[in-house]
Image (cartoon, rainbow, N blue to C red; front, side, top):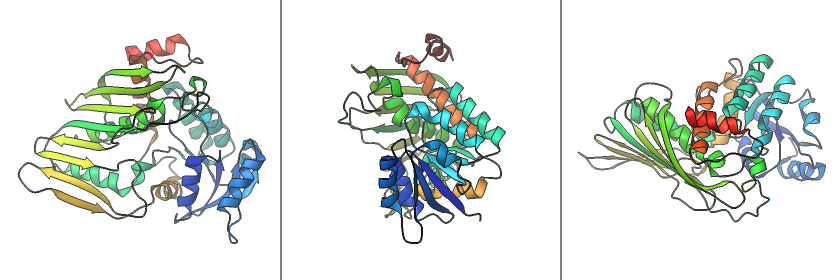
Length: 350
């Protein structure tokens, strides 16, 4: 399998998690990091350099994109910069893993995907949980009828952040709030399960209703959504940045339920447990061997760079998730200052 040299765009906390697990990748090596602050880039590079694999630091993203020694980039900057940097990376011929959401809205996601197509490069939205074997096993359990016919999905991802108003999570000019930061996990999971229940890679909701709390800074601090799929499956989703939730997934069916206690960030150094509760038998605890999902996400670039997208997280899947988030935001009346009013209206009518 081809070796991939990586560059990181934006040396933040998520980028550090990726860099840490990249060391366990079968195909990837961290070679460079770029930041608008050369000092920050150097600090990050020093942290992840080894004697055998020094990491270079750049004081601009453009410098890293221009480096012929970089095969792929991990974009980990605020949401509003994703599309611009995906386009720039694709034009430079770099394969791309971009932090979620791929774009603030569907129109931007289409622009990013079109750039990847034109550049002939790999592009994946960084829903890393999709690459963990726990998710693969969940899909298999649903498809094989382990709990009978799927009827309802509960998915939550919310945390209580102690963030100042200028922080990206609280800043509407940076597309802050819970729906775009963590709500996409729940949307993508519900679509994945609803699709698997009918032998499809994913399914799109036919109807979305929602409620939420928009805080004083103008972002959603807490939001819920109810989804209905054509098959009759329903889903209830929660996302937030000011309220802690249990952050789990429960799939209920005609013969029992499946519980994932750690769906999004399973311990990379310990087995993950899937609970299968059937109405006619004892609970089955399925142990999934420890896995580093960021490393597996990176290895997918080496495996699928020729086709441009991975089956775990392809372009059509990303478009469906961002469209559902557009509708979720519209349903609670959340529009960012840089968005025209027509965008929210169109999403609400979808």
